[in-house]
Length: 340
Ligand code: FAD
Ligand code: EPU
Image (cartoon, rainbow, N blue to C red):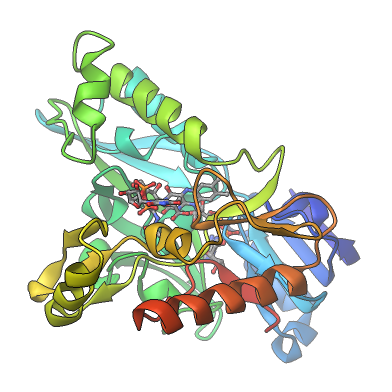
């Protein structure tokens, strides 16, 4: 199925929920719809492009003047199986948490800690989604899509995707060029549980047996206790990445702030908790007009109703400056800001 619109309102298509529109919007459900659309609408070459899933990691600061492409492709299919593993090919338009629910129902492990992350399967590979000690890069076997530059469809192996913390080749060389149509995930039939994050293990044990269902239920409960539901309050999850700094800077900061949250990262570096840094600068629960900072998680900026994208973006810049000023730490955006 193809849907194609001009001057299309986006309010219901992104979780910040501010009023913006797209000049052109194209959504399709079959991979072969895309080349057909492109060949019959040659003017797309001259337009600014944005590939979009559920819009749960986007902030529009303005109307989008170009073409939005939404590959809303359904389907979960078993493509391979052996004694220990199962490989699922999943359409880019499948709701991420429905895939997690499906896997947990069948007792296939590897994605249960990623329960309740909003968004679609396509973006899981773009963002290398992560939570509670798990990152999806460990489960992605391959990614299939359509390259707008070469006008060919091909498959990229997981090890070619340049995955890193909230990063991948799809945010760099292939940004708004490679339209992901499906992802193959490798799951475990005899799962090993990952429970080292915070007090996850103790919380799961409160439910009795440690199994996929109880891990999923616990992660959902913890998330619901801290993160605002986008259906109720506009937000896009963490607005900034957790900064990864040199050990020497972390040590200096710990001398002054011994209670600072920090974790070991690769290459001897240290990951700091951006939420902690922002809270220390006094922003937690801050509100100006309808733009604000969540009162249970300072890393989440929110739209109470009628904030513009520009107001939320300006607030994020003020927060960035104050963290830089107080701690000498630069915060990188986690959310994709469109139009700035
Ligand atoms: P969109 O926001 O629509 O797009 C995100 C990026 O992917 C954009 O750059 C877009 O161009 C690109 N893209 C989307 N689909 C495709 C495609 N098919 N082909 C090529 N490029 C594409 N994230 C985490 O990692 N961990 C969390 O714990 C987490 N918690 C969240 C909690 C809340 C309440 C919210 C609102 C968000 C949270 N997020 C989290 C962020 C968000 O859910 C993820 O980034 C998610 O993967 C975005 O999916 P989406 O379909 O909404 O993508
Ligand atoms: N913290 C504070 N104050 C706050 C928020 C957090 O002091 O206002 C401290 C906490 O006490 C804790 C530490 O910061 O010591 C980490 O907090 P939390 O466990 O809530 O996780 P986070 O680092 O803030 C990251 C991800 C989330 C993911 C959670 C759980 C990033 C940018 N964010 O948040 O992902 O769900 O860990 O794994 O890495 C997202 O990407 O949108 C997202 C929500």
